[in-house]
Structure formats: C-alpha cells, structure tokens
Length: 455
Image 1 (cartoon, rainbow, N blue to C red):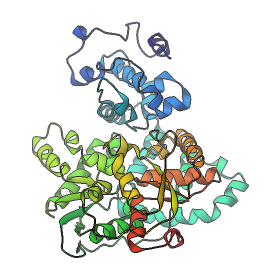
Image 2: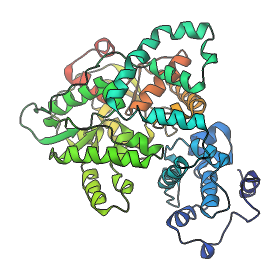
Image 3: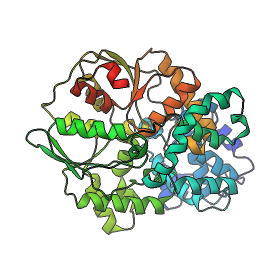
C-alpha cells in the first residue's frame, strides 16, 4: 500500500519543508480545513477511485488530492499547475464518499476547490478557452440543438477518417467530441412538449418532469418513455415550458455562478407548477438537485427555497418503486440486460435497488451483474470532454467488464453514461445497444418486441 511518506515525497517541489501531518489542536479554524483534517489516510478510498485504479498514483487518489487541498488551504502550496492537474483529473464520481469510514465530504471539498481553480490565472489559455466555449453551449438546449446536426452527421464519416488516420491530426478534445457525437441520433430535433399530460385513469400523483439540456436534445426518446410510463401508472405529468438546465454540469466544473443562475430558473419554474414531485431521469441532475442548498450557502432566502425544492426531487426509479400497486401491465421481454450504476445515482443518491427493481418488474428480463459495478465509466459530467484520455481509458475498462457478461443490452440511468458506454463499445468493436431502464419498462408496458424496441 502507498505510504504517507510516499505522499510527502510526491509533493516535493510544490510545498515547503513543513510536514503535511498536523495535530488537530494546531489546525486552522476554517471550515474547509476542518473538513480536510477529517481524512485519516486509511486507504479505503483507493480501490474505489477510478483514476487511482488507472495509474496507481497517490496524487490521483482522493486522499492524495485531499492533502494537496490541505497544503493549499494552509498556505504551503499555490494553486499552480500541479494542484490544477491532479484536481482536474478527478472524475467526481463520489465512490470515495461511499467508501470513507470517517465521513469525509470529499465531493463538497472538491467543488469548493474547483471554484477557486476556475478563478485562477494559472490554468492554460487553451484550456480556459475550451472550457468557456463548452459551458457556453452545454447547459443551453437551443445552442446544443444547433450542434446536433453536424455531430450526428459525423457518424457517416467516422470509419473513413479512422482508416485514413486523419483523427490523429486533431486535438484530443476534438476527437473525443466527435467520438461522442457518433452516439447522437438526428431524431427529435423539435424538443416541443405539451405543458400538461393527463394520467391514464384516475390521477394518483401530480409530477413535474425535468427535461434537461443534454437529455432534452440528445435523448428525447428517454423523456418520452418517462412520460408514457408515468401516465400509464396514473401520474399527471407537468412540463414547465420555462425550465432549462439544472446547473449540474456547471457545478461539477466549479462554475458556481452559472450553476446558481440555472438552478434559480429551474426552482422558479417548478414552484409555479405546484407539483407533488419533480422527476428526473438523469442521475447527475438528480444528485445535484437534491443538494441545491449547498449551492446557496450564505443566501438564506434561496437556500430555504432550494431545500424545499430538493425535498420534491425524485429519480424516475424512485417514483416507479413508490407507485404500488402498479397499474400498467408488464409484457415479457426475453432479454439479458447488464445494468451499469451511474455514480450520481449509486453514490450521489444512494439508489442501487430501485433501478434494479424497475427492471426486475419486467417478465423474462434477466439482469446481469457487471464486475467492478461501482467503478465509474469515465463520463463524469463533462469529464469526457475535459479529460478525454483518462475518460477513454475508463470507458474502455468499463466495456471490457461489460463484455464478460455477454449481455444483449446495456442499461444505465444517466445521459453521460449512455454516450460514454456507446463510444467505448464502438472503439472495442463490441457495440451492444445502450438504453435507459425506463425505455425497457416503457417497451414492456406497450407490449413491444425486442426488435421493435431496438428499431
């Protein structure tokens, strides 16, 4: 096991000669430093950390990054290239939070430091420009829709560009964007929705649906399957027309001001709708929306509104699990399904059983466990576009694990994971269809065959 002495040696050149180990009585009273000091360096996080599994480098593990943050917080290390590099490499999967016996809130610490890094002039010019462009587009559905045609069109020339080795001449972030673009269907460009869809039969719940940004533009069939399933189970569905991105992508990247603006808009739109639940079918969105209060610390008015909103947020698998007895008949689907746990569902929302119960309610469907099912696929919000090499390595690792179970379909509950696993499947020439669990349930309720589901 990597020792603490190794960690100190690894810091050579970026911190002074003061020891990184400090007694609790000498700690600064700052909130961050107090949280950082809770790490006892036990190492339980190491086998759960995707980047540590890739490289075996202590600096790219949660406890190594915590020591870097601590050095910065104590004034013994600047926010320079080394700190930025190792914190940027973190996927933000939260597996370490689940594994930590000391209850270290690593996710909140990381988001706090990423906000500081975002304000640092030490980040490279090219990196700053790429991030600015990326987050000027990703959270905005109308802008995303303009990108959809060229990205979807790229599918037709991918093989040709690969065979001619043309891709090697482009920056890695561009090829990553193009690679993900191959998973995008040109269908569903309009994105139009009625404001209210009635329940089938007597209504037993009034649910609001977050249509999202990436989900709305690239995975419109998932939203439509969600609406059909909710209404079939007796839920009235309200879709506020003014809603936009929930702010999750921005928050993960440390762009907290942008995240707050987007979050306020979402909160206001659903407040006006007066719904019982706010339903999301994207794990990353749900995880952030359930913790909105953290985003508004220091602003009690908005923190209170955010907390009230968060109390209504539910993943679609939670809603379906709570709707007992079920109303809609499930028809058999003779299919072998490998279910991949999105990190923001498993670790962020502690939802492991609910999506499996949703799938298990489908007759004849066989759920296959994936080895390393708690390890991130490398999507991580916009991680696959910001750290494309590491993300591709993690995606390749995930598809190799999926390959071992010989599944007919891969199911996962997050838009980023859907794109990431599809891209990894193409690279490995093992390209099973990747669907959201709600699409499978919707097909079962509608009585579709497997062929009809996939085409």
